[in-house]
Length: 198
Image (cartoon, rainbow, N blue to C red; front, side, top):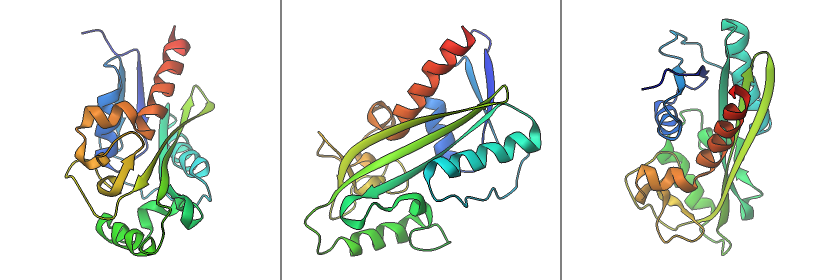
């Protein structure tokens, strides 16, 4: 196996997100988790946009550890709900950040809505050699009326991507990564790193 050409700290405390990104990245790009770095700070997410939150998290780690790093922020945006929950997706139903509670509230708010169109959006912020870069991934879909599937996390059991009859939670990880918002953003990130490192 070739030696990693670049190592990056991922500024996320969500092990499922880290695992998802690791599954997409080639072996030559090594991801180091906050736990592996023994960073246990509660990184604030005080931005009003996904871009702001991704940059806040990346800058927090870069400033404290002086290392190359990246962070991402993702949100579910529902058109008939004025693009909510958006930046508040993880805490839509409260600071307990319960996926079950978030989905329950989402389904309740859509009970009388015919338009269930939605999109997932990810913004990935990279700080590499003191410079900042942003990468975005978007996938369109709709919100189902009930949960289906056991894979994934967050809103995956109720998000049906366009062109599919299955929710993200019914797809296996490889299928989801091939089309997901996070997969799209990470592949842009990979292409950039390939060019950057030659």
